[in-house]
Image 1 (cartoon, rainbow, N blue to C red):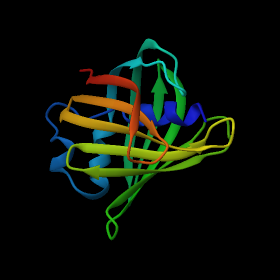
Image 2: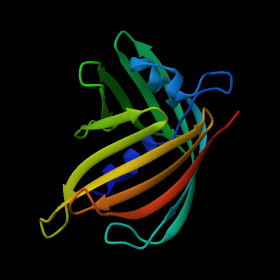
Image 3: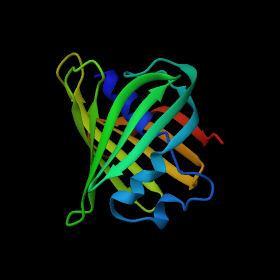
Length: 173
């Protein structure tokens, strides 16, 4: 359960070159091209049921490409291979899916990405150690093609959300 929030937080990190349009100016699977490039990622974790207080700074690099209706990013964290992300888009439902593939061949995970303009939401659900159901999401607000403000939250009812982390990502030149 701890790996999934980290991976989705990493998914939250990325964007396009400065000459490339902001995500809201693209459509379909091409929106995901905003993930390409290198980023400085900063997050402040809050002390909650699912996180411990602390600050973290990492470098994130996404080597991305499109092949047909797929968009893939080989993701590096602090220059170490992390995961391969493969994205698809369902235009009928206007929903994106991400497939997180670890480099060691362990189990992959599928996630949903809800994109409305410059707001990207990565929702998922999981259970705590006692078996109680919780809902999680990372909410990304793209303020430009080179900056993202994001937050990690969890909820018991999908109505009342508790922030477990806040971060900022900046595209590196």
